Image 1 (spheres, protein in one colour):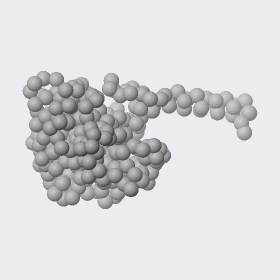
Image 2 (spheres, helix red, strand yellow):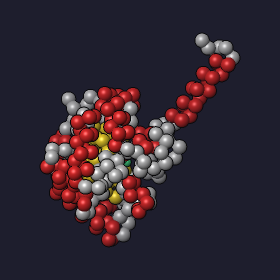
Image 3 (spheres, protein in one colour):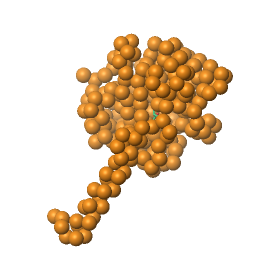
Image 4 (cartoon, helix red, strand yellow):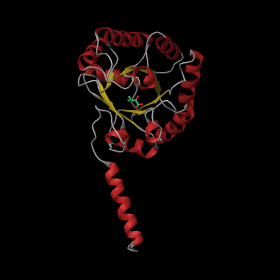
Length: 256
Ligand code: KIV
């Protein structure tokens, strides 16, 4: 049976850690789902798999195209799609239109959007009223790259207070879960204790209710990885070796 928002919240209450990863196509999605990943995110970090330098250029149409392929591979995991840069920041109407397209066209169960005070809190409340499950995302928000950079957030008293208050406000607005990206472990622990919805950490330490990583980092497909990513295998090497072996056999007329 497919995992629901209620199930994710129940796992927080039970202290069962939530396993989340990103996916961008059918084959990857099927493998992650079959391996028992609880939450699959079609993240805008997919921009990197598509050859973009940052997450900013990826469009809503590209997100939807890939999310449809991922949907076909997912049977059990909760499926979530990122709203990309400038597909929700203009107005609440734009956010409802974009999130509505994601749910209707891809069959995903919810959307994730970045940011908090004050506009995004109102946007989340309106999306939730419209029946759209929303995951918040605070701390390092890569869509604000040109304002925040890609460095750890919440290191000062003032910024950590702000992130904590944003998380609380997003929960009050109706978010069902919250990504905490690249913030100090203590701050992530404090937010996790304060919220009744699950926190999913990335570069936020051990005390979150679950963890997410970008699958191309985990598999060693990315050219460079953020400092908090763990690379579990090196597919760049494996693929290069397989392709070189094939090329050699073709050139030496050993294959077929
Ligand atoms: O786009 C993405 O992959 C994300 C994760 C870092 C949570 O938002």
